[in-house]
Image 1 (tube, one colour):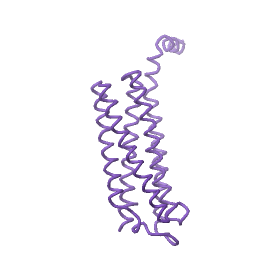
Image 2 (spheres, rainbow, N blue to C red; image 1 turned 135 degrees about the horizontal axis):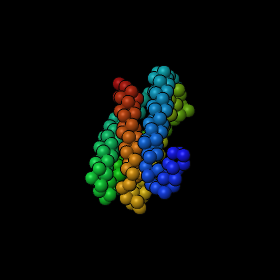
Image 3 (cartoon, rainbow, N blue to C red; image 1 turned 180 degrees about the vertical axis):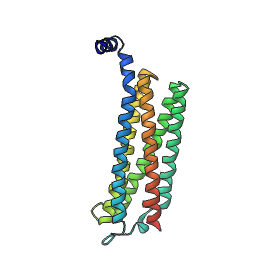
Image 4 (cartoon, rainbow, N blue to C red; image 1 turned 45 degrees about the vertical axis):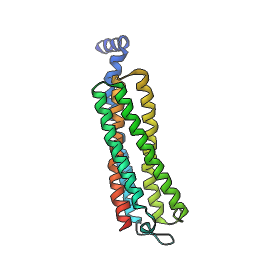
Length: 204
């Protein structure tokens, strides 16, 4: 009977029922993030094993552009900061501020992806492709997977900005902003490992 009453209340107050599901959706996101951690851990482990298998191709120390990957790092770290400012604007219930900082974050993310694509084109032009040897296969798979995650985050962020523009700051959009912020910070942490393990060690 109590179950029937709860169902009836949910039917009369669908927004309340939807609000009750928000913690479960955040939990689902954390589960997704854990599986993503396992994915990147596997790719990092594979890269570590294959990083010395460079026979038949150019060495990373010969091709890596130090100013390029330093610029990528600066841009992504800055975008993480602006993502935090978006969350702060949401806490102040400023729709304009929230959308504005999300737009800045997306622009920085797009600049990061653009630099990464340019880097891949440069490497390919110098004879380093995913098929060159085991090292470059591991490199393009690891760095490319991170780049794909950033690209997905950009699409997600743009769609969220459109939704906030239509609906404003609600329980649903608040949860989505929180989730995209966590996702973006996670990509930042992964990049710091990439910067250290792949690029810094690669030029030494």
